[in-house]
Each structure stands twice: as structure tokens, then as C-alpha cells.
Image (cartoon, rainbow, N blue to C red; front, side, top):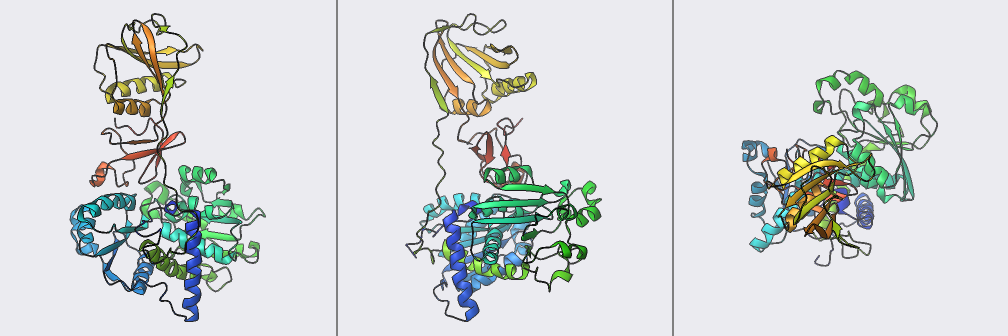
Amino acid sequence: MSDSPFKGRSIAVVNDLSKDEQLYLYKKTTELKERYLNGDPLEDFRLNDAELGCYLFFLEDSTRTKESFRNAALFHGVKLINFDVSSSSVKKSESLMDTIKMLFGYSQRSLFLLRTPQEGVCKALDETLEEYAKVLGKEKPAFINGGDGKHEHPTQEFLDEFSFLEQKKWDNREIHILLTGDLFHGRTVHSKADGLTIFDRVKIDLVAPKELALPEHYRERMVENGFTIREFESIDKYLDQKDIAPIWYFTRLQLERMGDEVREKAAYLRRAVTFRKDFLEKIPQGTKFYHPLPRHRETPTIPSFLDSTELNGWDVQSMNGFFTRVIEIAMVTGKLGGDFNGNLLEKKSFDAQYIEEIKLSRKTKVEDRYKVGIKPVDRGIVIDHIGRGESLDQIWTLINRIRKVLGLNYRSSHGVYHCSDTSIYKGIISLPDIFSFEQKEIKMLAALAPECTLNFIEDQSVIRKLRLHMPPRIYNFSNISCKNENCITHPLQFQNVNTRFHRHGETFVCSYCEKSYSYTEIWDE
């Protein structure tokens, strides 16, 4: 067990396992399932560790996920604790962090299986409890995400991918899949933006009316991952063409999360994504339907008349949840992994330089450089190229935000001016007699106005120039926040988890709920 590269790891999102690590999970699941169904010995997979406290911590109702995890934990012979939220102080607004710390202290070793309405919980707990475990001199606990808000559901994704691979006889060269139902709220669909990368080539057909469409940032991630995407507003429209996917993935409509205006269209929305008998003649031989289950008993997107047909792939898919979760528990507790020989998950590097020293070919005089209205600077700093190329309103907003966030309440001047190309504007802030910024202030300025320049002035000449690029990470700033109210870092959650963003292309991404923002959106007004 000590040789396992997975011991103590947490699974908060699909990408917490590399492609090779996921394929290892599926390989071991195949071995377990074959032995289980053949009645062969299973001790190679069992923990049999009575000192391991396995906590089922579900703050939202669940049937399939909770019960499959409960049975997987019983299979392993661990100390299973079903945390009863209804009779706990969580209902009295008890801190989630404090509750988990308390439970962690009750067992020699700990594993937490969680479902929460808040997003990014497992990652936050993993970081917090790692430090807490060091203080106590105990093993770090592992966390497995059984669904967080409308963010991700990695363990459902793993059982889905296992089911797809089973159908394809373990050929992962390509997949053509249809996703339909509530693509907007469906975290099982959102997880496929990364989960389907175990296939070399991916073609996705998104079938949903605009009210249920996939959020744009998940669609963008699919494109970044090289997926080919087609979109249709209903199953009717989809079946009007001939290139039909052999794998269909349905989700239920989560009308309880929608506003009144959308709920008024419920009948139309259901019809657009619900399978009907008259569709059967258009479905190619060998097609399989999947659903995360359970279905809505009154208005299922896969009606019961399909249960006894060859299209039914969801019953086996549901059973696969038990097998994949047995293996997931065995991996993060170190029972499995000693024979793993693939590529481990690479830790993200945030060492990229964001401060560029610009070589000066000659000293540049400043008396004409900063235009009429800007006070000439004999000695000090000029922030130039603020919001270059943006609109006048956007540049003025940036200037005001920079002055407020950096607290530039000095004798100074600022304005918006033409560049050498008079069709392009930029902002300038002139700070006479200010000779330096602290590193934190420079990083904050880089995040506020990437590609601006800092010009250091002596004797009315630029003696040093820095260009500031977007930083790789932003954290420990009191005036930034994730605007997703369900994020564990949001002030309304009262969990005291500090906001942290990392750069992804030209955007900043919340390191917990993974919501994307432009560099202007992360700041508090």
C-alpha cells in the first residue's frame, strides 16, 4: 500500500486523474467486475481496514451515488459512518470546515465521500485538511466528490466512461456521443468536457433548446480539448439528418433550479429532449442509451417503454457505479496502485514570469510623451498603455479601479489619450515623486490592467520600463472574489476560504468552482 502513487490523493474533478490514471481505474474495474460476476475471490481489492473512518457526507439528497458508495465502503470492510445532516448542527449553519475537522479527529485514518450544494468543496477541504493533518501528525485524509452544485460529478463521469468503453470493447480511438436533456444544470454533462478526453477523437452532438443549452465555458473547454461539436434544438431536428451517434446520454430536466419564465415552457422543453416511440425507426442498430439515473417517475426523458429494448444501456451503467467506486476507494487509500506504470498527473506550474523588463535603446524625454493634460514628471512613475485598444468607457473604468484598488491617493494626474494610431486609445496615470511599487502592488496592477507599462522617471527621462503581463495566479487580495454564489469561496457561504484564481489563456479561472472571468470581472466594486 505504501508504494501506491494514489494514496492520500483526492478526486474533486475529473482532471484530478491523468488519462493513464483513469485508464488504470477502468482496467482494475474490469478485473473486479469479472471476478465479482464469476464468483472468484476478491481479497486483492478489499481494504479490510477497521481503523479507516469512511464518512458518507451528503448535504443533498441522493440515491444512486450515496448507495453505491455506501455499498462500496461496506465491501472494503471499513468503519462506515453515515453522517446524518438532518440531525446535525450543519442545519444550524455550523461551519463545514469545522465539522470535517471534527470528524477527521475521530479515526486513525479518514476518507470523506461528499455531495454538497456548494461548489469547489473537495478542493478546499483537501488543502485545508492537508495542513491540519500536519499539525496533528496524522495521515492526510482523502476526499471524493460525489457531486458539487452544478459544477462536476467526477465519479459519475468515471462510471460513464467505463460504460462507454465496455460498449466499444475497450477501443478508445474515437467516440461519437449525443448529449441531451438539461445540459445547463447537468453536472454529469459538464464533467464530460474533460472526461471524454480518454478518447483520441471526440465528436459530440448537443441536443437541447437554448433554455437548456450547455454553458458557454464548458462548450469552450470542449473546443479547447479538440472535440468536434454539433448543436440541435431538439431530438426531432437531430433525427432529420443521417449522422446519428451510436451513444446517447440523457439527463433529467432540473426545473426546480429554473426561473418561472423557463418553467412556464416546461411542456415544450420536455418534448424537445424526450424520446418518443415514433423515433424508434430512425435509430441505427447497436445504439445504446445511457442516463445517470434515477429517472423522473412522471416525465422521464427515457420513457419506460424502452426498458426492455436493446437500447437499454442505463441498467448496466448503474451497476457499474458500484464497481468503479470500489476501485476509486481502493486507489485513494493506497490499496491499489503499486502496479501502475503510466504517466502520473502533472502538477500545474505557476512559475510563468509576468514582469518583462523592456530594454531602453536611449533615454526617452517625457515632456511631450504624455500629452496635454498630464502633468510632466521630473521624477516618479508613469503607468502607460492602460486598457490599450479598449473603448473610452472601459479605459476610464480601469483607471478608476486602479486608483481605488492600489490606493493611489497622491498628487497625480490621469487621463485617456490617443496612441500613435489615433483610432486607438489608452489610459495613463502620472505619479510624480512616487519612486517604487511593492511586489504585491505590481502583481495587482498586472492583474488589473495586463499589458500596461511602468515607466520609472529620473530627470524627466525614462530610466527603466516594465511591461506587465497577466499573472499566472492571483490570491491573497482582499478586493477580489469569485462571483459564483455557490462557490465555497463566496462571502455568502461564510466558509472563510480565500479566493484564488489561475490564468487560463486570456481569462482567470476560480481554482475551486472553475468559473471563468475576464481580468476586469474578478474585482469587487
